[in-house]
Length: 421
Image 1 (cartoon, rainbow, N blue to C red):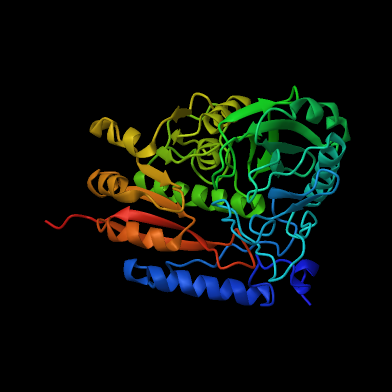
Image 2 (cartoon, rainbow, N blue to C red):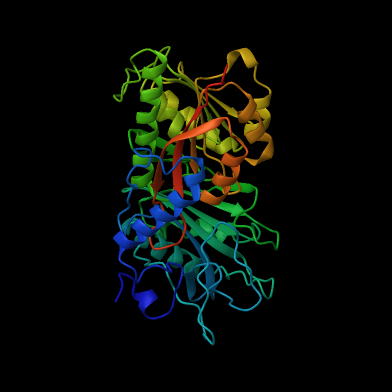
């Protein structure tokens, strides 16, 4: 027996490693990633740190549920489980294929990986759909209205998004929002009319006066808007942010930067300290943690919602003087910067595809002395490291955001090699 009844009954296979004890999963993942990065220095004594472990259950702060079934009996399941024939799961979502011959999808809203608040919020969202009589969207038939229910939650508040094919059901949805769990303080409708394998559309319609929730992650209470990206496992993310802060403190000390970056939060307002870029900064997790320690940080992110979140959090923390956030493509922005005004440290946290040839070429040639690379794909990290031979891996650590799956994340510190005379 595992910790998940759905897995034991053969109803869901997303967590393929559940039968393996978690410590063994972690050891295997750590060995695999270290072996992959050994050609770049991961095998050096003292370089590789013990992995950042997760709680085995109750750690997920986000749920991405397909709405299946009928308007009278909606079912919240995972992409791939609602229509096992002829359906391709949306990208970036773990598929849970239904067993062969399955007569109907299985409701997975009680997944044990979710925070308890998510179980309650999803149950109430299901009731809203039922009372509003909104028919689930059928990919095979290209009919119906509600496609997904997306939930992001902290311990005591949640953000709920109903992804709809059109705005035709908005009136009924608004009428029954009082049936949502009262901790769902931010609610929106995302209009996604296209018949494509994508999780959401471009139009977001607020359904509540409150527009954001506050999600404490490490030392920073992040402000999260409906289309902001946040880490799924915030407890592990908090340890990741602190680890990067510790490495930045070491870099500052070695470079003779002011002592505000010493592992303890600096006073509000920051000051002249380590100069850093945070490329692909999202809602500002890395940037704001570094700024709290006295660094002067510029964050760059393509999502306007994420940048709005980062700016609002910086203002709430009194860090506007030591942070700057820009909506831009990270590669294009970096290449436009004055070569005489480069930072001491570049933190990069790219999507799964990695940095790409243009940004790796820039980091290889630009005289930025230190890079911290947080990767959600060790394979793309290895490819990027091969394209940046001037940067030497000096420390690395596996970050286990997704227990019970083969997915691995890793953070490495890179230092520019000294040129030989």
